[in-house]
Amino acid sequence: MHKNLADDTTNVNVGTAGTNVTATEYGDGRSHITKLTLTSAAITIGDNASLGTGSLIYTFPAGPLHVESSSINVGVTLTTGTPTTDTPEIGLGSVVASGAVAVLGGTPAFEDIMGGASTPVLADLAGTAELFTHVCDLKLEAADAHTVYLNLADAYADVTDTAATVTGTVWLKWTLFA
Image (spheres, rainbow, N blue to C red):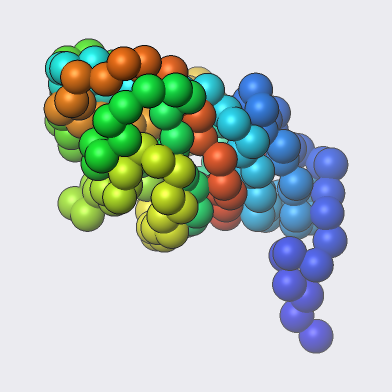
């Protein structure tokens, strides 16, 4: 009988969760499903300008690995201030988004875990949770960046405060080859 990866938690060959992120690891030490629960994880947005930003949510363990798929169900909320009507692109990448960019697609590593041709867009910055899934084929060699950033990019409106938080769940399905 085939056993489901999500039946058992594991602490073998697991990664490290970011600040205000709790990781629950399922699998057999080689094949993994990682559930990341984000509770008010800090992220910064732009102010009257285009800006790419990100928040470190997970670091895979050392060694070569393959990321197969991801799913996010998160909302982004301005800590204080207005307006909350911006609709930034959201993605998962091995590199933190940065620079004066309104989209994540200009730098593939900003969204190499989730994004690409159909980069998801949030409904607002008022905490409305959005669910997105993505099948990917990302192979990381031992020397590659093993970080996972939740990235945003937009041509932001003039806001009264650029501090925001992310709350929700991110799922990663991956296999370690070491």
